[in-house]
Amino acid sequence: MKIRPELRALRSDDAPQRHAQRHLKAKIEAWRAAAPVELVEAELSQLAAGALLEDLPLLDALFTPGDPSARQFVGTLLASLCAGLSQEPLGLIPLRHFTDDALSSLMLARSGFTTLSLQAFDGVGMARRPQPVSASYSPCHSWEHVLAGNAKAGLIHCRQSHPDRADLEVEPITLCPGMILTRSNSDTALSIGRFDGCMVTLRLQCRSTSGGVSREYRLEDGMLVHQAAGTPRESRLELTAALLGRMGRTDVAPILSAMAQEDGGAGLRWQSMRECLSLDSAEGFRTLCAIAQRPADPLYAPAMALRLQLLDAHPQLAEVELCPV
Image 1 (spheres, one colour):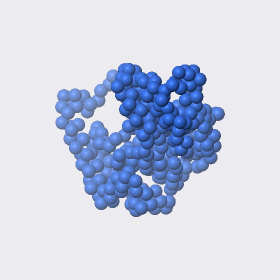
Image 2: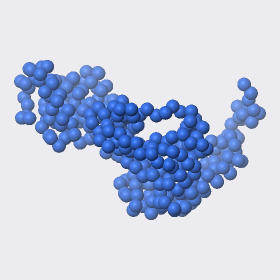
Image 3: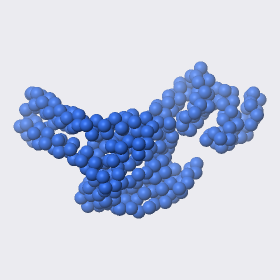
Image 4: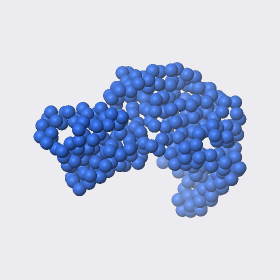
């Protein structure tokens, strides 16, 4: 392995690396201190708190067709970072980032589950990827402004979802500079096809804080291939409920019963009810029947079906004190 003298020097003295990091950090701080950037970040926090994008003039301008704000906003940052890297080529940009063979992403700002990021798609890397076989849908909303490059793409609409499948419809589109793409990710997925060169987009994504479910469907026939909680918090709670069940913690059955009947994501509530059933069949069955009494509950139909299935397999459950269903 050949190690260049510049890298070998860093092994014995990391002062140059620390100097490079301070230099690039100063570049980022200077960019953020500019009035438009500070105001955009303040509006991002308002969007995360529930404000509408059209009520946030600076943030809205970044995703308005024909408005130069997005190119100016991003161009100022890139000019500063490129100048900093030309002086300190071994420095690391102090912003959260990701890269693989096809996609590179740089997070510009974040507030809660709301993010503003710059994305670059490499045509050569995209061509090496296999053709997609599924489409994913999650409880969030996104706005994308194409800053440079062209690409063929498809909007995969989920027209109607069923318990184990969905009706999918593909709408071909062409992405080009200046195009603004607004979509609800819960029913519309974006699939980018092969293209030449590089495409750069500014992306604003606002994830729902009220839970929800992320689903993945097979493109060939619309069959459900994966499902998960829509937020990290609900995922953690689902795992906690499952762990308590595996530990045999019968003392937490009343807590799981309450979780199953509270407002929240359907996945978390159903997992809590299942674990409650496994820990305390009487408590769990009463919880199941309570849910099956509420026609407006999203879990009403599966709860009714499971109740009938359990009564057929275990008639003794009919002796459990139940509310009328």
